Length: 391
Image (tube, rainbow, N blue to C red; front, side, top):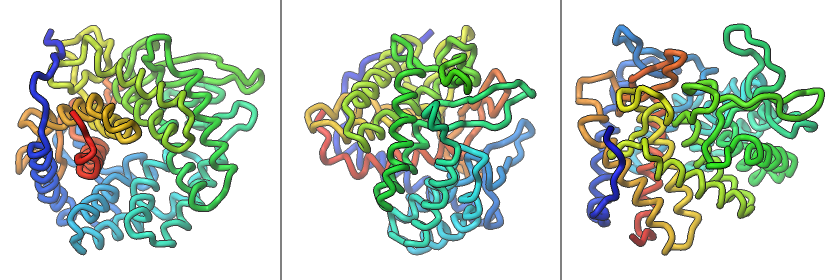
């Protein structure tokens, strides 16, 4: 098994500029395929086992990713065409603001309307986010002090109150709307949920569970699972990447230094893991016994890179290099021919070799639009952060 190794050479600013511009140029070419070949409000998700394009409905957690990518491309290029495309693919998601059956509203609405509002300051987008945030908040239990993730469970398994670690990242929409609207109740819901996640989802070594079930009678933890990972005591790579990112943004929004420490510790678990490959693209689960023959998950690498850049941005300049350099090295690996699609490969997807869940046979070794979203987000963050990084 190939293990990770220390980089002997750091990436200089000139390399960073090339990394950003070349990949965002490549992304524009790739994403144009979707614009030219899909009807508006058709949302790409992945590729099925027959090599056919797999689309997702508007209520899917990945539905907002294409719109989010388009907003980022407009933010980077300032070309009006990307703004028009972004507006078109955003508009079809508006009805999801009334969706009270899912905790995934961040991924549906904040990637689309959230990015649109941050970039254009269009108050119509703000109105959608306010309604969406209230829909998300309706899933909050004031006794348990968490947001319920799922109403239905796979394979008809009964569960009282499931919460998954993704919701730590989904809190960003609540914090954002609270800040813009002055609704302190949304802030408190997000903060309480984050405190529960900090307490219940992290093991002593700062690895993570993916799912915690709460007892609605006792208002306490009933069971902890990894669920989408290999087994209940394993660490699913994508879930852990979201934990890094979510912890960093919680510190950003609350100023609670315990979340900064949590972000650092969970990042170090990821960065220093003995089963992280030398190219820094993790296996889908850190504890899959088939390593090194287990599938990789480029989507986890993209989320981790964005989370590490977020963490880096919150630190004093002299402390940023450790996390930013790791993120840059990850992006460099993703740029290689091993992970980036060839011009006529996999429709308009940018990256390949992502894995949803091997245990559930969900998108194993496939391209994923969510991977592309966080890849582009990482490059945009790096472009804005690059001049403040000291290696």
